Length: 506
Image (cartoon, rainbow, N blue to C red):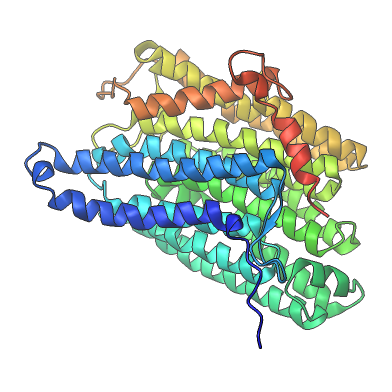
């Protein structure tokens, strides 16, 4: 008689909340649109969209709270105890908390922005929640099959979201490009997993680690294809070409979601795969990652200098930051991996903050995405201009911001691991980045505003997102290990969280 598997349903709790939330949002839109009181209300689509935004944020908050409680209890649950394919440990909970928080802020930013574009539909939030559910599977997976399942569950909704404003040709073009290149990346990744299965006879991380032979050509090719597949998702050179076009063409709220959550999920899944299934000191792996990191930093920063579109500039900026993060994988130490997690945490808030300013300035269905659109912003909306300066300084790594602490910890860990030449490349390219990051403050403070009308209001959701992003960037710039002891801020110990999380990696 076949015994029933020993299941721990607690391991599925964050995933279940988000997945169920996507169904509730879809059904909620139908029920609200048929409600008599809602049909007779003015601006019915706006009201329904706002309700769905709050509902989506509520389910995401439940997932974050569950992950935080599991993190604090220091438990590690496997869904199937006898054959674990996913593990809800501190590493996964840290990732879920970051992804869920970023998605909540995106929901807050989306409501008013989508109303302006007149595309505020329940499908948007359902697709966003499904993508987050896929990310949760990715970062919790300890088996290649579940990694691929989570990757596809994340990617397919984002293909649709990139083309959500289907009336615009640019949005359709970005969705098509992302879909085609993403499909190739998924195929390469799956082929690499198949070769690794052929070489090791296992799909679990532990089985691959036990059976992996660095002298086996089949295993090395499989590892190479696996890294290439992930390189597409993290937008690493030379697999970055899709990034600026997709970032520019997609609705800005979708671009913000992609820029932060996809990066976090892909990097944290990649760290878990490389540390769990392979020895990170394998020479071919280190050589591949070294070249990718150097090329990504150089190309991302140099190409960002010549951009006239702010969204394209931020796209190349995200490519450059992928290069910085790859330094931590090249170093391969526990300290370097903790620095990667801390950097990802800071990256979420400084990048999301920059996109939030662009969203706030969107007016009458038109994005403020060119440098000229920011001319004279300091005279008309000084608080917004000051926030944009803060986020640009943090992205550049200027002292007093979270971005500086992130680079300091990452570069320091790499130097200790003997990766001095790569750190020199990182420092030099960071100096290049100062030019294009400070170009925006110069335009805002030293040029006269244009005659075109500018949006002069900020919704409560947008204000909330901007406030959270600015507060985190500033607090982590001065108190990276422990907050200033005000209210709950003394428990903001992100560096400690990162170090505790990587302790669960092999």
